[in-house]
Image (cartoon, rainbow, N blue to C red; front, side):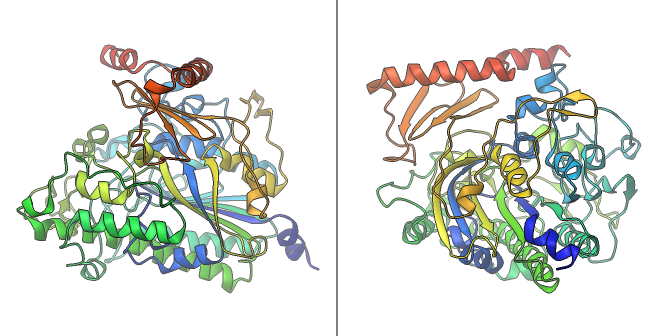
Length: 534
């Protein structure tokens, strides 16, 4: 056996694929009508996890999954602006270590293609702002990645992403038919090819912006879905709910949550053709991402390393009901296309989205469908904001398709990856002490063994708070009251038991308070005041 074969036999390659703002039911193997044959193929030969959780927003989730810590411990307790407190400094702290840093120290080659969004604020419409070396704006090569292609910011045009980097070099989009999702996939494939020539196992983080707004897609992809959504969001929600139950992902006892009260009845919608187009573009974005994932897996197969590569796919938060407001996005966006045409910002009824001159989102009613069967959206910590599909594909180890209902959080990825790689989590890095790891390894579940986490998990984002401890979930939609749900009986959070079980509420509130103090959580009102005063 040569050195490369020995490496593959003992230390798997690891690929972590992250979608952006994609809801729980937006891929075929989780009940969707969107065509995702490549993810479906992974699911058919892997494990679908039904109770995996993120942190409800892009950058907090990324900070958490990259470090194995809660977002506040990693420095991104809110977003990427610096609030002057270590838990809210807006970029990764020096007393945490990334998966890339830990695995590179353990002998892995570390690669990343796509969105970063854990390194401060970048102003896309100010080229003079795109400098390097700012300690408050570290990029992936500063945090352990050997090779990076992508964008440091949270969102932007798919046809003209800015700023765009290859490692420490600022670059321009290449080619007349440039589309960012394809470029992320292309560079991931390139990185796999280059890594396979060496004698190290590799860790590759593929971090798509799809299907985050703006609604940008290639016209031929959009055409595949035009007309499919003319029956409206209620029809989509009903069909997906039935499919999820049939697949065994949802317990048939759990009723679908009611249509959001802010979403109109489809028969009252005036611009149905425009609404159909909006969801068609969104579906096209997911479809294109799936084809890119197919190319990644095909390259693994071609290089005969697919058996020994652990690939995980998930989303960074639930479907997004935002109206293009995240951190003043429109004000920062590049105002023209690559050809110099002006951008038309906003959800303008009748203006069909998709081409490079438009800049729209798919809005609350379609996000409600994306998150079927759950309540609420990205930003909140009810299930619609934090539940993600997760597929694990590792042919050598996972030999039969399975659906696993164990409770997993993104903090567990670091622990799991280090476990399967045989790498120790460091107590210090570059001479600095490192915070203890919060996550737990779910590697036994990947090997087909029964596994359940030992400790509860917690959330806080913009005052929205939650605790999950076994079957119980305590959750608060800011500024409302605590709600309590039995997640075995009612995961769609329709039967609040708080008034009937005060002792359980008090116990879990105390757990939350202890966690919040330990992690440096600042009450949302205080953080808002600090932001106004800075």
